Length: 127
Image (tube, rainbow, N blue to C red):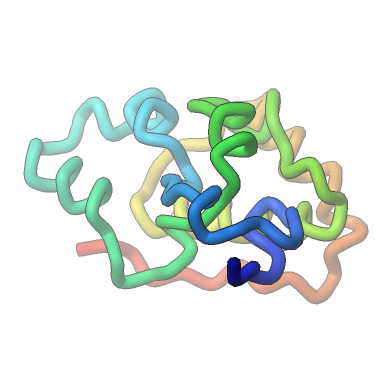
C-alpha cells in the first residue's frame, strides 16, 4: 500500500484509503462567519472551490472527525509542525471569502504567530 507524506494536519504515513477531503474552514464555520448572508451560488462556489489548494485538503479520517466544524479557538492540528501552515492557510481562506474572525478565533490564531515568522498569508479575493 502506498503511503503519502504529511497531511494538512501534519500526520505522516497515512494510507490513501484512510484520507478524506476536508474544507479547511468548515462549512458550518463559514456560515457563522458571514456565509449565511451569501447567495446560494456563492455558498456553492465556496463548497466546490478548487482554485486554491488550501481550501480543500486531504486529512486522516480521524483528524477530520476530531476537527469537525471547529475553528482554531477550539481545535488546532495535533502536530506542532503543522500549526504555522494551518494558521496561515486559515487566515488566507477567511480573507479570500471576506469571512469574519471572532475574538476567540483571533486569539488562537495570534498565539502561534510569534513562532511562524516566515509564514506568508497570501490570498486573492474570490469573485
